[in-house]
Image 1: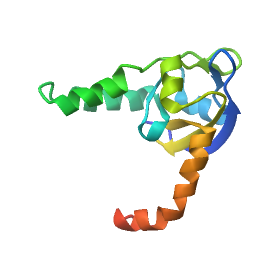
Image 2: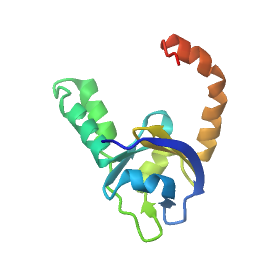
Image 3: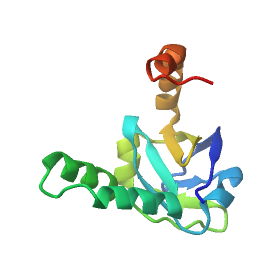
Length: 144
């Protein structure tokens, strides 16, 4: 069963590109997890079950479709299986940091089936668009 992540926590990335995974998220990730590029200029962090599900969806895409190949490359080319050190940190490779515009301050956000790692500046800009959330929910037919 996939973990259910929620909440947001701000941290800083160190000079070596290491990020502390907040304790509240570590248990849900388990021993094996994957970090990859995400939409909107963030990084996605999947537990192993969530990653396996994504890989199955990607494997089902037709190889003879150019857009399908682009999607596969987007998620798979930069994916990494980081290991937590004794301080609960992971090393994020430079290409992933560049994709997310991360230089120092980050915000780790739980969004249900995965975590998102954002540059804190990008996350703040994203928060400003939350003013439109009621219209977006309505457009998608989302009611609660």
